[in-house]
Length: 393
Image (cartoon, rainbow, N blue to C red; front, side):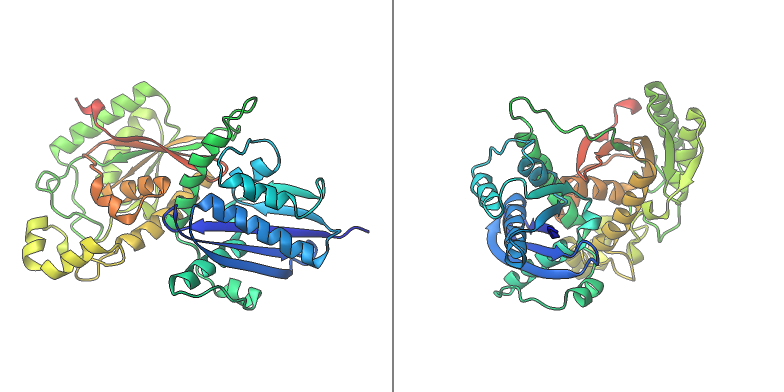
């Protein structure tokens, strides 16, 4: 009987292009045991090049085990799976020789390809990140016990996942333009319409107002903004559910809109604003005067928290990503209004774009503004709107 082997492969680039690496594992389809692993730091490359190199390495590892085996390749790269299955044309010059190299390992018809979600490709993802981590300190990856390593490995950051997703969107758009082929039909996305809450007394003064402060209510201006937004969204008629941060200003905004739409409000803790610690209620100038060194450190690194036990932007990103994934699963194919704050909205946009943390300081979000991000079944995201205030005029 012909043996079957499973190859899972992945690749990543920290910068796209940037420092890159790949990982691949050959699995026994019955026991799930890792029979072989491969990983390598490859220097500066794109996500897609790293993914193709991971595929080649995985196929070679499987061939070394059994050149007669039937191979089931599983990857979270829609681009590689569709191109290697022959459904999308390969146009990029860097990808053509790598695809040819992959096809040469086993005879045609002996290998099949399957797309899997990123959450099911953790082993290869972990190997790719180990390879990139090794390259960062001038070394190459060395194998270690796969089961122990997988159990001990931290989850890959949302930012890294989003960077891969954004790269796949760009490359897939080019590949799908082949004659006779359109973009893949992934079904209706989960669409998040992102509404920043209306003004509070702190908003016009541009004071830090997070989840660790006084939890202010909407001002009279903020209530008018919520009403105007409710009217505009009711006219559009696309919102199917309303989810809100637990903070009062968001709940009041959400309840105003939901009442107009005839919907209930669901509370999601992950959508709360950053805790700004000792900076709550202060203006930027006041923080600069009282905590100059702490402010500089905070502006320079997403891992630095505000003075007095606040949250870093990196912590907020992890929290928001968890909430995002939960809501995507709950509202697949639906359009949902998320009523939240500046940092969570900017973070969702940043992660969808695969942008670096410093991009948070380069987006403007007005009170009661609307933004939108669509999330597709293959893990990719598309930013559709940012800081729209037309409904307030």
